[in-house]
Length: 167
Image (cartoon, one colour):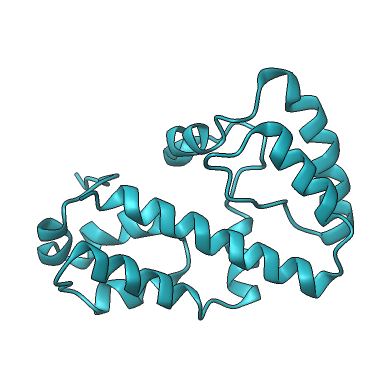
């Protein structure tokens, strides 16, 4: 039976086989080139070196990779399922129960406009803040919005990696 850990100390991260570490990193940013970069750079001398490498490696992700990763992300305001359910619920805890209908409508407009889900680093933001950001971003052109989505995905990956390999 394969165990898919949600956290791992740095020593275990550095010494575990690739198959053990991959699911942990996939949960942070499900883009193979990023995961492979972190796996290939082990061992890291410190947690900060790991976090720094993860952030630098995320700068190389392409829009095509992001679009594929977006297909696996839950919509803001919706409940995730599967292995990401708990993490997603924690990250989206700022969305109040009464805001789900507003998010559903705004998400539909966004997806009609851009052809992909709205992505925002939800951690620490209220539902009202995220909804306002969604409404504001509807005015972006495609190129600007792609840049914003990549920046948000990089922030999500950084936060998730910090939690996955705690101090």
